[in-house]
Amino acid sequence: MQIEPRLTVKEAAAHLGKSPSWLYHNRSRLGIRAHKIGGCWQFSRADLDKYIEATAVVEVVTPVVDENRSNKIILVAS
Image (cartoon, rainbow, N blue to C red; front, side):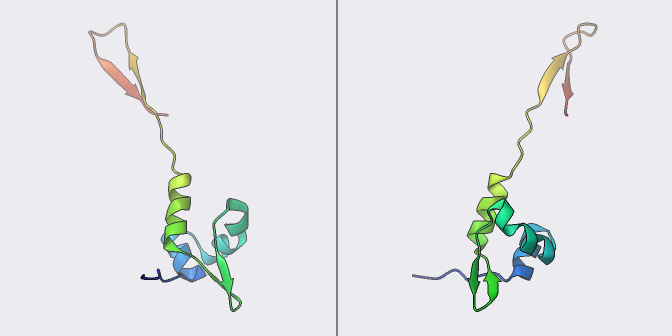
């Protein structure tokens, strides 16, 4: 069995594209799992990826038909 290496706060923040202070202060509020080992926070890359997937936003684009044009569909993104 291979154990996944843990990431430091700095490494985990870089993985999320945020600053270490942002991760430190928002970790609990956002439900990002972490372990405090020897006074240092450590993160699993798999847990960070689960957080990223859970916060993904999927936008549905609804086609709009312009009655003044001949069967052309205009896509409107919000």
